[in-house]
Amino acid sequence: MKIQNYREVKGIAAAPGVTMRIVAGPEEKAPTFVMRLFEFEPGAAMPFHNHPWEHEVFIIEGEGALKHSGGETPVKEGDVLTILSGEQHSIRNPGTGRMKIICVVPLVDGKMPGMPEKK
Amino acid sequence: MKIQNYREVKGIAAAPGVTMRIVAGPEEKAPTFVMRLFEFEPGAAMPFHNHPWEHEVFIIEGEGALKHSGGETPVKEGDVLTILSGEQHSIRNPGTGRMKIICVVPLVDGKMPGMPEKK
Image 1 (tube, each protein chain N blue to C red):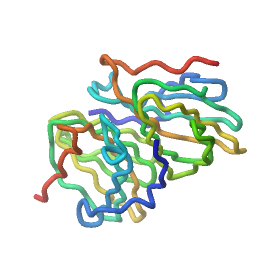
Image 2 (tube, chains in turn brown, red):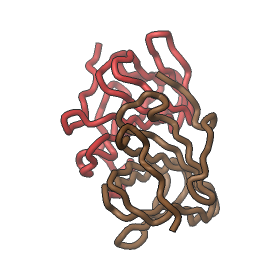
Image 3 (cartoon, chains in turn brown, cyan):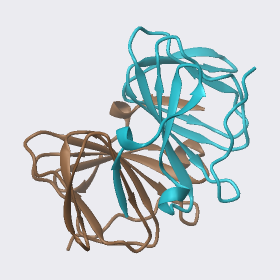
Image 4 (cartoon, rainbow over the protein chains, first blue to last red):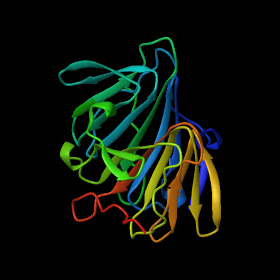
């Protein structure tokens, strides 16, 4: 059992203006999935990409936009995004405030799967 | 891919004063884990229990208390709780405001595992 505040966890630059914190996962001996918290500065975006694992995302704070193969959909606090294996996606913060999200992924071969490369 | 706000998802009484919403999981064809959102009214609690699967919990709003085999630890917004297989635990809301948490569990035999029984 481990209790920690996400603000105590070291941030990693996942993309320009996007900080990722791995808040629960292999380091806590969690065997199945990894919880990460991402903070997006205004204008920041993750690359448009896909991968053979799913995301379950919860928007904690702010407003964003989810780009997908059918276009782009606005998202906001309280929205939950289920993105399945192989589905193209990216999330960006088109607003003027911070956007904060939780994104959970499965472990792949016992590890957190890789981050998308810059395009 | 599915986008929905948690407030649109039907709530289920998980315990007196505790509403659970299953926001991402088998219904969305997610294959590995289930994201649930729980709202605790003031004074509400889940039973003290354990089970052979893990929780990864994020406190979105409010203040609570995590009971475990070593006592009880206060928790608050931004805290992340990793509770492993077999670890005794319960969460309660000792405050005067609402507590809102995300709790992710693995699928077991392709389904969300059961809820604790009342003691």
